[in-house]
Length: 106
Image (tube, rainbow, N blue to C red):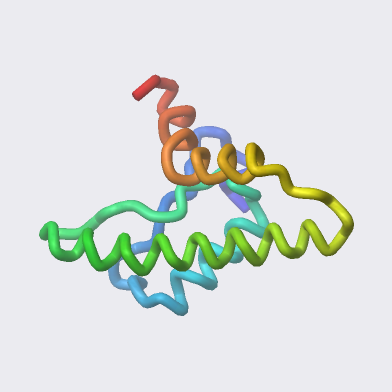
């Protein structure tokens, strides 16, 4: 995937016209399987505030579901997941990846 080959490329969210929960879940799952947590799972390309609210509500639930499934896969191999690892991964997905990519602190 290009996001692994080119460090100047950040895989970022889902295009507005693909704002369908099934598509968002498939894309998020695929990206997590290919990139780990080194992408930004959702962003706002909404035109009005109301779009941001409902888009984020269902996207957040989808991101959580995919993370839970991926942690379950890891735990099935015998690896123990620590709370600090989950907190780190969530912070990366929802905050830190962006700031690290642009080379700035919030």
